[in-house]
Amino acid sequence: MKRSYLALDLGAESGRAMIAHLTGGKVEFAELHRFANTPVRLPTGLYWDTLRLFHEMCEGIRAAAKAVERLDGVAVDTWGVDFGLLGADGSLLDNPRHYRDARTYGTFQEVFAKVPRREIFRQTGIQFMEINSLYQIHALQRDMPQVLAGASQLLFMPDLFNYFLTGAQASERTIASTSQFYNPVKKQFATDMLRQLGIPGGFLGRLIDPGMELGPVLPYVAERCDLRDETLVYT
Image (cartoon, rainbow, N blue to C red; front, side):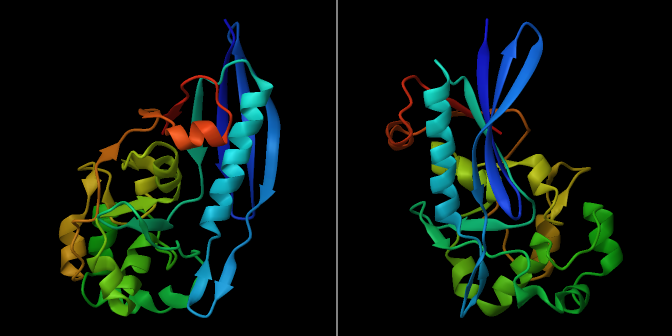
């Protein structure tokens, strides 16, 4: 029996929709749609063009719906560290910043003054880069505390697109591990460390494993993408 799955793969400069056909223990791939991923600079900083990216992802799903008799599943893969914040009503509070945005410059010294570098590494075990989510969150708390105070959910980029597709709010563990506030030994967010930085962790959601079923695409996505059957989304 032939099964077809769509991978929506987003890199820092481009994205693509790749269809995978599974037949008789073999996998065949084909590219269906490719698009640019161009950041946008505004007076307030450097941003990802998130809504345009989602539009292009839907174009990829629509291409897959035309190419196969039945689409058995969709999954999203993106770069790490960046994220979006949702309000209590599920709306996007601010367009996600690009990891090269200048707001994190010099944040090492500010963060290490409150939590020693050694302790951060002990809890998270990943390399130190100012682009990591930890320093982005610190800069947000420093510069725009009202945004963080109004956040009910933080979603990393693939999780955010999964939310747009399904309405499900969850953080997949491997992408959460890029943040530098995830503890891989305890398999949970390092909320105590965040509190030491004056950052409440109430906006951190449930963690799920890779390869989990999130649910079917929402009706508006199915209509937009001309999907004939229920299509599931996986982490």
